[in-house]
Amino acid sequence: MRFATSLDHARTGRSVSILSLIGIILVPLAIAGTLVWSFWDPQSRVSQVTAAVVNNDEPVTIDGRIVPLGRQLAAGLVGTEDENYTWVVTNEEDAASGLADGAYTAVVTIPEDFSAKATSATGDAPAQADVTVVTSDRAKLVDGAISQAIATAAVSIFNREVTVATVEQLLGGYTELHDSLADAATGANDLASGTGQFASGVVTLSGGLGTLATGAAALSSGLGELASGTASLPAQSAQLATGADGVATGVESTTSAISGLSQQAQYLQGLCAGMIPPVNPGDTCDSVRASLATNLAALDQQLTSTGFAANARAVATGTAGLASGLATVVPGIQSSASGAASLADGAAQSASGASQLASGATGLTDGSRQLADGLDEAVASIPVTTEDEAAAQAQAIAEPTVLTSPGGLFGSSAAPLAAGLALWLGALATFLVLRPVPRDAVGANRGPVRQALGAFVPAAIVGLVQSMLVATVLQLQLDLDAGGLVALFAAAALASVAFAAVNQALVALFDGAGRFVAMLVAILFLATGVISTTPPVLVAIANLLPVEPAASLIAAVVGGGGVASAIVVLVVWTLLALAGTTLAIARARVTTARAVLRDQHALVA
Image (cartoon, rainbow, N blue to C red):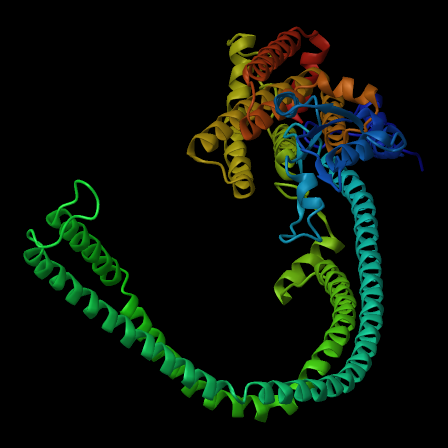
Protein backbone atom coordinates (compact mmCIF):
# COMPACT_ATOMS: atom_id res chain seq x y z
CA MET A 1 0.00 0.00 0.00
CA ARG A 2 1.32 3.40 -0.96
CA PHE A 3 0.16 7.01 -0.55
CA ALA A 4 -0.85 9.15 -3.51
CA THR A 5 1.87 11.46 -4.60
CA SER A 6 -0.43 14.10 -6.18
CA LEU A 7 -3.92 15.62 -5.94
CA ASP A 8 -6.13 16.40 -8.97
CA HIS A 9 -7.97 19.68 -9.46
CA ALA A 10 -11.75 19.33 -9.00
CA ARG A 11 -12.64 21.05 -12.33
CA THR A 12 -9.68 20.70 -14.69
CA GLY A 13 -8.22 17.41 -13.60
CA ARG A 14 -4.78 18.93 -13.39
CA SER A 15 -2.55 18.33 -10.37
CA VAL A 16 -2.82 20.81 -7.51
CA SER A 17 0.41 22.66 -6.96
CA ILE A 18 2.25 22.72 -3.65
CA LEU A 19 1.58 26.45 -3.35
CA SER A 20 -2.16 25.87 -3.78
CA LEU A 21 -2.07 23.15 -1.11
CA ILE A 22 -0.21 25.42 1.30
CA GLY A 23 -2.68 28.19 0.58
CA ILE A 24 -5.64 25.96 1.42
CA ILE A 25 -3.99 24.93 4.66
CA LEU A 26 -3.24 28.54 5.58
CA VAL A 27 -6.82 29.75 4.96
CA PRO A 28 -8.10 29.22 8.58
CA LEU A 29 -4.88 30.59 10.01
CA ALA A 30 -5.03 33.65 7.80
CA ILE A 31 -8.66 34.35 8.68
CA ALA A 32 -8.24 33.78 12.42
CA GLY A 33 -4.93 35.61 12.58
CA THR A 34 -6.21 38.64 10.73
CA LEU A 35 -9.40 38.93 12.77
CA VAL A 36 -7.67 38.39 16.13
CA TRP A 37 -4.97 40.92 15.24
CA SER A 38 -7.60 43.42 14.23
CA PHE A 39 -9.87 43.04 17.24
CA TRP A 40 -7.30 42.34 19.97
CA ASP A 41 -7.27 44.90 22.82
CA PRO A 42 -9.02 47.81 21.03
CA GLN A 43 -9.03 49.88 24.25
CA SER A 44 -5.28 50.40 23.99
CA ARG A 45 -5.68 51.96 20.53
CA VAL A 46 -8.86 53.96 21.06
CA SER A 47 -6.83 57.20 21.07
CA GLN A 48 -6.23 56.62 17.35
CA VAL A 49 -9.80 57.79 16.77
CA THR A 50 -10.39 61.53 16.46
CA ALA A 51 -13.72 63.03 17.49
CA ALA A 52 -14.93 66.62 17.82
CA VAL A 53 -16.81 68.61 20.45
CA VAL A 54 -18.90 71.63 19.43
CA ASN A 55 -19.79 73.69 22.49
CA ASN A 56 -22.50 76.24 21.62
CA ASP A 57 -23.62 76.60 25.24
CA GLU A 58 -24.33 80.02 26.72
CA PRO A 59 -23.45 80.04 30.46
CA VAL A 60 -26.10 81.17 32.95
CA THR A 61 -25.78 83.28 36.09
CA ILE A 62 -27.15 81.87 39.34
CA ASP A 63 -26.97 83.92 42.55
CA GLY A 64 -24.40 86.18 40.92
CA ARG A 65 -22.17 83.22 39.88
CA ILE A 66 -21.54 82.24 36.23
CA VAL A 67 -22.35 78.57 35.60
CA PRO A 68 -20.80 77.25 32.31
CA LEU A 69 -22.13 73.68 32.31
CA GLY A 70 -21.46 73.17 28.60
CA ARG A 71 -17.80 73.94 29.17
CA GLN A 72 -17.73 71.48 32.05
CA LEU A 73 -19.23 68.69 29.94
CA ALA A 74 -16.77 69.39 27.10
CA ALA A 75 -13.93 69.28 29.61
CA GLY A 76 -15.24 65.95 30.89
CA LEU A 77 -15.05 64.51 27.37
CA VAL A 78 -11.69 65.99 26.42
CA GLY A 79 -9.97 65.69 29.79
CA THR A 80 -10.01 61.89 30.06
CA GLU A 81 -6.82 60.59 28.47
CA ASP A 82 -6.99 56.86 29.25
CA GLU A 83 -9.13 54.72 26.92
CA ASN A 84 -10.70 57.73 25.24
CA TYR A 85 -10.85 59.29 21.80
CA THR A 86 -8.60 62.13 20.75
CA TRP A 87 -11.10 64.96 21.14
CA VAL A 88 -10.91 68.24 19.25
CA VAL A 89 -12.88 71.30 20.40
CA THR A 90 -14.08 73.05 17.26
CA ASN A 91 -16.99 74.91 15.64
CA GLU A 92 -19.99 73.64 13.68
CA GLU A 93 -18.50 74.33 10.23
CA ASP A 94 -15.30 72.41 10.91
CA ALA A 95 -17.23 69.60 12.58
CA ALA A 96 -19.53 69.20 9.56
CA SER A 97 -16.55 69.18 7.21
CA GLY A 98 -14.75 66.63 9.38
CA LEU A 99 -17.80 64.36 9.45
CA ALA A 100 -18.14 64.55 5.68
CA ASP A 101 -14.54 63.63 4.86
CA GLY A 102 -14.09 61.22 7.77
CA ALA A 103 -11.56 63.34 9.68
CA TYR A 104 -13.84 63.11 12.73
CA THR A 105 -15.35 59.76 13.58
CA ALA A 106 -18.02 61.41 15.71
CA VAL A 107 -19.15 64.90 16.72
CA VAL A 108 -20.73 65.75 20.08
CA THR A 109 -22.78 68.96 19.91
CA ILE A 110 -23.72 70.85 23.09
CA PRO A 111 -26.64 73.20 22.31
CA GLU A 112 -26.90 76.88 23.19
CA ASP A 113 -29.50 76.38 25.95
CA PHE A 114 -27.65 73.52 27.64
CA SER A 115 -26.78 75.36 30.88
CA ALA A 116 -30.21 76.99 31.06
CA LYS A 117 -32.05 73.65 30.78
CA ALA A 118 -29.59 71.68 32.92
CA THR A 119 -30.15 74.14 35.80
CA SER A 120 -33.93 74.41 35.34
CA ALA A 121 -34.86 71.50 37.62
CA THR A 122 -35.89 73.75 40.51
CA GLY A 123 -37.34 76.53 38.35
CA ASP A 124 -40.79 77.26 37.02
CA ALA A 125 -40.26 75.37 33.73
CA PRO A 126 -38.00 72.33 34.31
CA ALA A 127 -36.59 70.82 31.11
CA GLN A 128 -33.96 68.30 30.07
CA ALA A 129 -30.83 69.48 28.31
CA ASP A 130 -30.08 67.72 25.04
CA VAL A 131 -26.66 66.60 23.79
CA THR A 132 -26.37 65.26 20.23
CA VAL A 133 -23.88 62.62 19.05
CA VAL A 134 -23.49 62.20 15.27
CA THR A 135 -21.24 59.54 13.74
CA SER A 136 -19.57 60.03 10.37
CA ASP A 137 -20.93 58.05 7.43
CA ARG A 138 -17.32 57.16 6.73
CA ALA A 139 -16.80 55.80 10.22
CA LYS A 140 -16.28 52.13 10.92
CA LEU A 141 -19.13 49.85 11.86
CA VAL A 142 -18.67 49.90 15.64
CA ASP A 143 -17.36 53.47 15.91
CA GLY A 144 -20.85 54.84 16.44
CA ALA A 145 -21.49 52.49 19.35
CA ILE A 146 -18.17 53.37 20.99
CA SER A 147 -18.76 57.10 20.44
CA GLN A 148 -22.17 56.86 22.02
CA ALA A 149 -20.80 54.79 24.93
CA ILE A 150 -18.06 57.34 25.67
CA ALA A 151 -20.48 60.27 25.41
CA THR A 152 -23.02 58.43 27.56
CA ALA A 153 -20.41 57.82 30.24
CA ALA A 154 -19.42 61.49 30.23
CA VAL A 155 -23.06 62.57 30.38
CA SER A 156 -23.72 60.15 33.25
CA ILE A 157 -20.85 61.61 35.25
CA PHE A 158 -22.06 65.09 34.43
CA ASN A 159 -25.62 64.18 35.46
CA ARG A 160 -24.39 62.96 38.81
CA GLU A 161 -22.49 66.19 39.40
CA VAL A 162 -25.49 68.32 38.40
CA THR A 163 -27.77 66.22 40.60
CA VAL A 164 -25.47 66.70 43.58
CA ALA A 165 -25.37 70.44 42.93
CA THR A 166 -29.15 70.55 42.63
CA VAL A 167 -29.65 68.66 45.87
CA GLU A 168 -27.21 70.99 47.59
CA GLN A 169 -29.22 73.92 46.28
CA LEU A 170 -32.42 72.37 47.59
CA LEU A 171 -30.86 71.76 50.97
CA GLY A 172 -29.70 75.36 50.97
CA GLY A 173 -33.30 76.37 50.35
CA TYR A 174 -34.42 74.31 53.30
CA THR A 175 -31.79 76.05 55.43
CA GLU A 176 -33.14 79.43 54.36
CA LEU A 177 -36.61 78.18 55.21
CA HIS A 178 -35.36 77.16 58.65
CA ASP A 179 -33.86 80.60 59.20
CA SER A 180 -37.05 82.30 58.07
CA LEU A 181 -39.12 80.25 60.46
CA ALA A 182 -36.66 81.16 63.22
CA ASP A 183 -37.25 84.83 62.43
CA ALA A 184 -40.97 84.14 62.60
CA ALA A 185 -40.52 82.61 66.03
CA THR A 186 -38.62 85.71 67.18
CA GLY A 187 -41.44 87.85 65.90
CA ALA A 188 -43.93 85.73 67.84
CA ASN A 189 -41.89 86.29 70.97
CA ASP A 190 -41.97 90.01 70.40
CA LEU A 191 -45.72 89.76 69.94
CA ALA A 192 -46.02 88.00 73.27
CA SER A 193 -43.96 90.73 74.92
CA GLY A 194 -46.18 93.39 73.39
CA THR A 195 -49.26 91.56 74.60
CA GLY A 196 -47.84 91.64 78.12
CA GLN A 197 -47.36 95.36 77.91
CA PHE A 198 -50.89 95.65 76.63
CA ALA A 199 -52.18 93.77 79.67
CA SER A 200 -50.22 96.06 81.97
CA GLY A 201 -51.77 99.05 80.26
CA VAL A 202 -55.21 97.59 80.80
CA VAL A 203 -54.46 97.31 84.52
CA THR A 204 -53.39 100.92 84.65
CA LEU A 205 -56.50 101.88 82.71
CA SER A 206 -58.61 100.20 85.35
CA GLY A 207 -57.06 102.30 88.05
CA GLY A 208 -57.55 105.40 85.97
CA LEU A 209 -61.21 104.65 85.63
CA GLY A 210 -61.49 104.60 89.43
CA THR A 211 -59.91 108.01 89.57
CA LEU A 212 -62.30 109.12 86.86
CA ALA A 213 -65.20 108.33 89.15
CA THR A 214 -63.79 110.64 91.84
CA GLY A 215 -63.28 113.43 89.35
CA ALA A 216 -66.82 113.07 88.10
CA ALA A 217 -68.08 113.61 91.65
CA ALA A 218 -66.10 116.84 91.89
CA LEU A 219 -67.49 117.98 88.55
CA SER A 220 -70.98 117.33 89.83
CA SER A 221 -70.33 119.56 92.84
CA GLY A 222 -69.04 122.35 90.65
CA LEU A 223 -72.01 122.13 88.36
CA GLY A 224 -74.29 122.36 91.44
CA GLU A 225 -72.62 125.59 92.41
CA LEU A 226 -72.96 126.81 88.86
CA ALA A 227 -76.64 126.01 88.91
CA SER A 228 -77.05 127.98 92.18
CA GLY A 229 -75.16 130.93 90.75
CA THR A 230 -77.26 131.04 87.61
CA ALA A 231 -80.66 130.61 89.29
CA SER A 232 -81.36 134.39 89.31
CA LEU A 233 -80.24 134.91 85.72
CA PRO A 234 -83.69 134.37 84.18
CA ALA A 235 -85.32 137.08 86.32
CA GLN A 236 -82.41 139.50 85.76
CA SER A 237 -82.56 138.86 82.04
CA ALA A 238 -86.28 139.61 82.08
CA GLN A 239 -85.62 142.90 83.86
CA LEU A 240 -82.91 143.73 81.36
CA ALA A 241 -85.33 143.09 78.53
CA THR A 242 -87.89 145.39 80.16
CA GLY A 243 -85.30 148.16 80.53
CA ALA A 244 -84.13 147.77 76.96
CA ASP A 245 -87.70 148.02 75.81
CA GLY A 246 -88.13 151.22 77.82
CA VAL A 247 -84.97 152.66 76.30
CA ALA A 248 -86.30 151.94 72.85
CA THR A 249 -89.59 153.59 73.75
CA GLY A 250 -87.75 156.67 75.12
CA VAL A 251 -85.60 156.94 72.02
CA GLU A 252 -88.66 156.80 69.88
CA SER A 253 -90.32 159.56 72.06
CA THR A 254 -87.16 161.67 71.82
CA THR A 255 -87.10 161.38 68.08
CA SER A 256 -90.73 162.42 67.92
CA ALA A 257 -90.04 165.39 70.25
CA ILE A 258 -87.10 166.52 68.14
CA SER A 259 -89.33 166.42 65.09
CA GLY A 260 -91.83 168.62 66.93
CA LEU A 261 -89.08 171.08 67.89
CA SER A 262 -88.14 171.42 64.28
CA GLN A 263 -91.68 172.32 63.38
CA GLN A 264 -91.75 174.83 66.25
CA ALA A 265 -88.50 176.37 65.04
CA GLN A 266 -90.07 176.94 61.68
CA TYR A 267 -93.08 178.51 63.35
CA LEU A 268 -90.70 180.61 65.43
CA GLN A 269 -89.18 182.00 62.26
CA GLY A 270 -92.41 183.71 61.40
CA LEU A 271 -92.79 185.17 64.81
CA CYS A 272 -89.25 186.49 64.85
CA ALA A 273 -89.65 188.69 61.92
CA GLY A 274 -88.73 191.89 63.66
CA MET A 275 -90.27 191.14 67.03
CA ILE A 276 -87.15 189.98 68.91
CA PRO A 277 -84.00 191.99 68.84
CA PRO A 278 -80.81 190.18 67.93
CA VAL A 279 -78.61 188.91 70.72
CA ASN A 280 -75.33 189.39 68.87
CA PRO A 281 -74.53 192.06 66.34
CA GLY A 282 -75.32 190.80 62.92
CA ASP A 283 -77.70 188.11 64.16
CA THR A 284 -81.01 188.03 62.53
CA CYS A 285 -84.10 186.07 63.29
CA ASP A 286 -83.70 184.17 60.08
CA SER A 287 -80.12 183.17 60.83
CA VAL A 288 -81.05 182.01 64.33
CA ARG A 289 -84.02 180.12 63.01
CA ALA A 290 -81.98 178.53 60.24
CA SER A 291 -79.25 177.44 62.65
CA LEU A 292 -81.83 175.93 64.99
CA ALA A 293 -83.55 174.09 62.18
CA THR A 294 -80.25 172.75 60.84
CA ASN A 295 -79.13 171.45 64.20
CA LEU A 296 -82.45 169.82 64.94
CA ALA A 297 -82.48 168.17 61.50
CA ALA A 298 -78.97 166.84 61.97
CA LEU A 299 -79.91 165.41 65.38
CA ASP A 300 -82.98 163.79 63.93
CA GLN A 301 -80.96 162.33 61.03
CA GLN A 302 -78.35 160.89 63.39
CA LEU A 303 -80.93 159.22 65.59
CA THR A 304 -82.73 157.79 62.59
CA SER A 305 -79.63 156.58 60.65
CA THR A 306 -77.96 154.75 63.56
CA GLY A 307 -81.07 152.69 64.19
CA PHE A 308 -80.64 153.20 67.85
CA ALA A 309 -84.28 152.66 68.53
CA ALA A 310 -84.41 149.51 66.42
CA ASN A 311 -81.28 148.18 68.09
CA ALA A 312 -82.69 148.93 71.48
CA ARG A 313 -85.83 147.07 70.50
CA ALA A 314 -83.78 144.07 69.28
CA VAL A 315 -81.82 144.06 72.54
CA ALA A 316 -85.02 143.98 74.41
CA THR A 317 -86.33 141.07 72.33
CA GLY A 318 -83.06 139.08 72.64
CA THR A 319 -82.86 139.68 76.34
CA ALA A 320 -86.37 138.37 76.74
CA GLY A 321 -85.42 135.19 74.80
CA LEU A 322 -82.28 134.79 76.91
CA ALA A 323 -84.33 134.97 80.03
CA SER A 324 -86.66 132.26 78.69
CA GLY A 325 -83.69 130.01 77.66
CA LEU A 326 -81.91 130.41 80.97
CA ALA A 327 -85.03 129.23 82.68
CA THR A 328 -84.63 125.92 80.77
CA VAL A 329 -80.81 125.59 80.96
CA VAL A 330 -80.36 126.04 84.65
CA PRO A 331 -82.35 122.90 85.60
CA GLY A 332 -80.36 120.90 83.00
CA ILE A 333 -77.09 122.07 84.51
CA GLN A 334 -78.24 120.93 87.88
CA SER A 335 -79.34 117.47 86.61
CA SER A 336 -76.00 116.77 84.83
CA ALA A 337 -73.75 118.03 87.60
CA SER A 338 -73.35 114.63 89.31
CA GLY A 339 -72.35 112.61 86.21
CA ALA A 340 -70.24 115.39 84.71
CA ALA A 341 -68.11 115.68 87.82
CA SER A 342 -67.26 111.95 87.88
CA LEU A 343 -66.66 111.91 84.13
CA ALA A 344 -64.17 114.79 84.32
CA ASP A 345 -62.04 113.07 86.97
CA GLY A 346 -62.20 109.66 85.20
CA ALA A 347 -61.26 111.19 81.87
CA ALA A 348 -57.98 112.50 83.27
CA GLN A 349 -57.05 109.06 84.54
CA SER A 350 -58.22 107.44 81.29
CA ALA A 351 -55.73 109.54 79.39
CA SER A 352 -52.85 108.12 81.43
CA GLY A 353 -54.12 104.56 80.98
CA ALA A 354 -54.65 105.11 77.26
CA SER A 355 -51.03 106.26 76.92
CA GLN A 356 -49.77 103.05 78.46
CA LEU A 357 -52.22 101.08 76.31
CA ALA A 358 -50.77 102.76 73.20
CA SER A 359 -47.26 101.74 74.23
CA GLY A 360 -48.34 98.12 74.55
CA ALA A 361 -50.16 98.28 71.24
CA THR A 362 -46.97 99.56 69.59
CA GLY A 363 -45.05 96.56 70.84
CA LEU A 364 -47.82 94.30 69.60
CA THR A 365 -47.70 95.91 66.15
CA ASP A 366 -43.91 95.57 65.84
CA GLY A 367 -44.01 91.93 66.86
CA SER A 368 -46.83 91.19 64.46
CA ARG A 369 -44.89 92.82 61.62
CA GLN A 370 -41.78 90.77 62.31
CA LEU A 371 -43.89 87.62 62.44
CA ALA A 372 -45.57 88.47 59.13
CA ASP A 373 -42.23 89.21 57.41
CA GLY A 374 -40.71 85.98 58.64
CA LEU A 375 -43.71 83.94 57.56
CA ASP A 376 -43.69 85.60 54.13
CA GLU A 377 -40.07 84.63 53.62
CA ALA A 378 -40.84 81.09 54.73
CA VAL A 379 -43.76 80.80 52.32
CA ALA A 380 -41.67 82.21 49.44
CA SER A 381 -38.98 79.63 50.15
CA ILE A 382 -41.39 76.70 49.76
CA PRO A 383 -42.18 75.89 46.08
CA VAL A 384 -45.82 75.30 45.13
CA THR A 385 -46.24 72.95 42.14
CA THR A 386 -48.95 70.87 40.51
CA GLU A 387 -48.62 67.10 40.10
CA ASP A 388 -47.46 67.46 36.47
CA GLU A 389 -44.93 70.12 37.40
CA ALA A 390 -43.66 67.99 40.26
CA ALA A 391 -43.27 64.99 37.91
CA ALA A 392 -41.34 67.10 35.38
CA GLN A 393 -39.16 68.52 38.13
CA ALA A 394 -38.40 65.07 39.50
CA GLN A 395 -37.49 63.83 35.99
CA ALA A 396 -35.22 66.80 35.40
CA ILE A 397 -33.50 66.25 38.76
CA ALA A 398 -32.98 62.54 38.18
CA GLU A 399 -31.78 62.96 34.57
CA PRO A 400 -30.93 66.59 33.76
CA THR A 401 -29.24 65.64 30.47
CA VAL A 402 -30.30 63.21 27.73
CA LEU A 403 -28.23 61.88 24.86
CA THR A 404 -29.56 61.84 21.30
CA SER A 405 -27.86 59.72 18.60
CA PRO A 406 -29.59 59.96 15.21
CA GLY A 407 -29.53 56.87 13.01
CA GLY A 408 -29.46 54.13 15.63
CA LEU A 409 -26.46 52.25 16.94
CA PHE A 410 -24.46 51.90 13.72
CA GLY A 411 -26.33 54.36 11.52
CA SER A 412 -25.55 54.48 7.80
CA SER A 413 -21.90 53.50 8.33
CA ALA A 414 -22.89 49.83 7.95
CA ALA A 415 -24.02 50.32 4.34
CA PRO A 416 -20.54 50.76 2.74
CA LEU A 417 -19.15 47.77 4.65
CA ALA A 418 -22.06 45.48 3.84
CA ALA A 419 -22.22 46.50 0.19
CA GLY A 420 -18.47 46.30 -0.41
CA LEU A 421 -18.10 42.91 1.28
CA ALA A 422 -21.17 41.45 -0.44
CA LEU A 423 -20.14 42.61 -3.90
CA TRP A 424 -16.55 41.46 -3.47
CA LEU A 425 -17.56 37.99 -2.27
CA GLY A 426 -20.09 37.85 -5.09
CA ALA A 427 -17.34 38.48 -7.64
CA LEU A 428 -15.17 35.87 -5.94
CA ALA A 429 -17.99 33.33 -6.10
CA THR A 430 -18.58 34.16 -9.77
CA PHE A 431 -15.13 33.00 -10.74
CA LEU A 432 -15.52 29.85 -8.71
CA VAL A 433 -18.06 28.89 -11.37
CA LEU A 434 -17.01 30.82 -14.51
CA ARG A 435 -13.62 30.45 -16.12
CA PRO A 436 -11.50 33.62 -16.04
CA VAL A 437 -9.78 32.50 -19.25
CA PRO A 438 -11.55 30.78 -22.14
CA ARG A 439 -10.81 27.04 -22.49
CA ASP A 440 -9.69 27.53 -26.08
CA ALA A 441 -7.43 30.47 -25.32
CA VAL A 442 -4.38 28.75 -26.80
CA GLY A 443 -5.76 27.83 -30.18
CA ALA A 444 -8.37 30.51 -30.70
CA ASN A 445 -8.08 32.98 -33.55
CA ARG A 446 -9.24 35.90 -31.35
CA GLY A 447 -6.68 38.14 -29.72
CA PRO A 448 -6.03 38.22 -25.96
CA VAL A 449 -7.99 41.45 -25.46
CA ARG A 450 -11.14 40.07 -27.07
CA GLN A 451 -10.74 36.81 -25.17
CA ALA A 452 -10.32 38.71 -21.87
CA LEU A 453 -13.40 40.79 -22.58
CA GLY A 454 -15.32 37.73 -23.67
CA ALA A 455 -14.70 36.08 -20.28
CA PHE A 456 -15.26 39.38 -18.44
CA VAL A 457 -18.63 40.35 -19.90
CA PRO A 458 -20.62 37.42 -18.43
CA ALA A 459 -19.05 38.02 -15.02
CA ALA A 460 -19.80 41.76 -15.29
CA ILE A 461 -23.44 41.01 -16.15
CA VAL A 462 -23.70 38.75 -13.10
CA GLY A 463 -22.10 41.51 -11.04
CA LEU A 464 -24.61 44.07 -12.26
CA VAL A 465 -27.46 41.79 -11.19
CA GLN A 466 -25.77 41.31 -7.83
CA SER A 467 -25.36 45.08 -7.44
CA MET A 468 -29.06 45.66 -8.10
CA LEU A 469 -29.98 43.12 -5.41
CA VAL A 470 -27.51 44.57 -2.89
CA ALA A 471 -28.69 48.14 -3.50
CA THR A 472 -32.29 47.05 -3.06
CA VAL A 473 -31.50 45.45 0.29
CA LEU A 474 -29.63 48.56 1.43
CA GLN A 475 -32.55 50.78 0.41
CA LEU A 476 -34.75 48.98 2.96
CA GLN A 477 -32.50 50.39 5.68
CA LEU A 478 -31.41 53.72 4.19
CA ASP A 479 -34.79 54.86 2.77
CA LEU A 480 -33.16 57.11 0.16
CA ASP A 481 -35.12 59.38 -2.17
CA ALA A 482 -35.35 58.63 -5.89
CA GLY A 483 -32.15 60.49 -6.76
CA GLY A 484 -30.23 58.87 -3.94
CA LEU A 485 -31.47 55.41 -4.92
CA VAL A 486 -30.36 55.89 -8.55
CA ALA A 487 -26.95 57.06 -7.32
CA LEU A 488 -26.70 54.01 -5.06
CA PHE A 489 -27.53 51.69 -7.96
CA ALA A 490 -24.87 53.37 -10.12
CA ALA A 491 -22.20 53.19 -7.38
CA ALA A 492 -22.95 49.53 -6.66
CA ALA A 493 -22.90 48.72 -10.39
CA LEU A 494 -19.50 50.38 -10.87
CA ALA A 495 -18.11 48.56 -7.83
CA SER A 496 -19.42 45.17 -9.01
CA VAL A 497 -17.93 45.63 -12.48
CA ALA A 498 -14.56 46.61 -10.97
CA PHE A 499 -14.65 43.66 -8.56
CA ALA A 500 -15.44 41.24 -11.40
CA ALA A 501 -12.45 42.53 -13.37
CA VAL A 502 -10.09 42.31 -10.36
CA ASN A 503 -11.21 38.80 -9.34
CA GLN A 504 -10.90 37.65 -12.98
CA ALA A 505 -7.34 38.96 -13.08
CA LEU A 506 -6.39 37.36 -9.78
CA VAL A 507 -7.61 33.91 -10.85
CA ALA A 508 -6.27 34.29 -14.38
CA LEU A 509 -2.84 35.31 -13.14
CA PHE A 510 -2.47 33.18 -10.00
CA ASP A 511 -5.18 30.50 -10.22
CA GLY A 512 -5.92 29.14 -6.72
CA ALA A 513 -3.50 31.53 -5.08
CA GLY A 514 -5.48 34.37 -6.66
CA ARG A 515 -8.66 33.13 -4.99
CA PHE A 516 -6.75 32.96 -1.72
CA VAL A 517 -5.66 36.58 -2.18
CA ALA A 518 -9.26 37.58 -2.94
CA MET A 519 -10.38 35.90 0.24
CA LEU A 520 -7.70 37.75 2.22
CA VAL A 521 -8.90 41.01 0.70
CA ALA A 522 -12.42 40.28 2.00
CA ILE A 523 -11.13 39.40 5.47
CA LEU A 524 -8.91 42.49 5.62
CA PHE A 525 -11.76 44.73 4.44
CA LEU A 526 -14.02 43.30 7.13
CA ALA A 527 -11.36 43.65 9.82
CA THR A 528 -10.58 47.29 9.01
CA GLY A 529 -14.19 48.27 8.41
CA VAL A 530 -15.67 47.32 11.77
CA ILE A 531 -13.82 49.64 14.09
CA SER A 532 -11.30 52.47 13.83
CA THR A 533 -8.93 50.92 16.38
CA THR A 534 -7.52 48.56 13.72
CA PRO A 535 -3.70 48.61 13.63
CA PRO A 536 -2.44 51.30 11.22
CA VAL A 537 -0.49 48.75 9.17
CA LEU A 538 -3.66 46.88 8.26
CA VAL A 539 -5.46 50.14 7.52
CA ALA A 540 -2.68 51.23 5.18
CA ILE A 541 -2.85 47.92 3.31
CA ALA A 542 -6.65 48.04 3.09
CA ASN A 543 -6.54 51.55 1.60
CA LEU A 544 -4.55 50.13 -1.34
CA LEU A 545 -7.20 47.53 -2.16
CA PRO A 546 -10.07 48.06 -4.64
CA VAL A 547 -12.73 47.42 -1.99
CA GLU A 548 -11.88 50.62 -0.06
CA PRO A 549 -12.68 53.11 -2.88
CA ALA A 550 -15.90 51.20 -3.56
CA ALA A 551 -16.91 51.57 0.09
CA SER A 552 -15.94 55.27 0.00
CA LEU A 553 -18.07 55.77 -3.12
CA ILE A 554 -21.12 54.17 -1.50
CA ALA A 555 -20.51 56.14 1.73
CA ALA A 556 -20.38 59.38 -0.27
CA VAL A 557 -23.65 58.51 -2.03
CA VAL A 558 -25.36 57.68 1.27
CA GLY A 559 -23.98 60.48 3.44
CA GLY A 560 -22.90 63.11 0.92
CA GLY A 561 -19.47 64.10 -0.21
CA GLY A 562 -17.18 63.92 -3.22
CA VAL A 563 -17.31 60.85 -5.46
CA ALA A 564 -14.90 61.76 -8.23
CA SER A 565 -11.75 60.31 -6.68
CA ALA A 566 -13.43 57.01 -5.81
CA ILE A 567 -14.84 56.66 -9.33
CA VAL A 568 -11.42 57.33 -10.84
CA VAL A 569 -9.74 54.73 -8.62
CA LEU A 570 -12.36 52.06 -9.47
CA VAL A 571 -12.03 52.75 -13.19
CA VAL A 572 -8.23 52.48 -12.91
CA TRP A 573 -8.55 49.17 -11.02
CA THR A 574 -10.90 47.89 -13.73
CA LEU A 575 -8.53 48.79 -16.53
CA LEU A 576 -5.51 47.41 -14.69
CA ALA A 577 -7.38 44.16 -13.95
CA LEU A 578 -8.43 43.74 -17.60
CA ALA A 579 -4.84 44.38 -18.59
CA GLY A 580 -3.73 41.69 -16.14
CA THR A 581 -6.26 39.21 -17.53
CA THR A 582 -5.09 40.03 -21.07
CA LEU A 583 -1.53 39.42 -19.97
CA ALA A 584 -2.49 36.07 -18.46
CA ILE A 585 -4.25 35.01 -21.67
CA ALA A 586 -1.32 36.15 -23.78
CA ARG A 587 1.01 34.18 -21.55
CA ALA A 588 -1.24 31.09 -21.80
CA ARG A 589 -1.14 31.27 -25.61
CA VAL A 590 2.61 30.67 -25.46
CA THR A 591 3.09 26.97 -24.61
CA THR A 592 5.40 24.07 -25.20
CA ALA A 593 4.87 21.02 -27.43
CA ARG A 594 4.90 18.83 -24.37
CA ALA A 595 2.04 20.82 -22.82
CA VAL A 596 0.07 20.53 -26.08
CA LEU A 597 0.54 16.79 -26.23
CA ARG A 598 -0.47 16.48 -22.60
CA ASP A 599 -3.62 18.45 -23.21
CA GLN A 600 -4.49 16.37 -26.24
CA HIS A 601 -3.88 13.21 -24.30
CA ALA A 602 -6.18 14.48 -21.58
CA LEU A 603 -8.88 15.21 -24.16
CA VAL A 604 -8.59 11.74 -25.70
CA ALA A 605 -8.71 10.12 -22.31
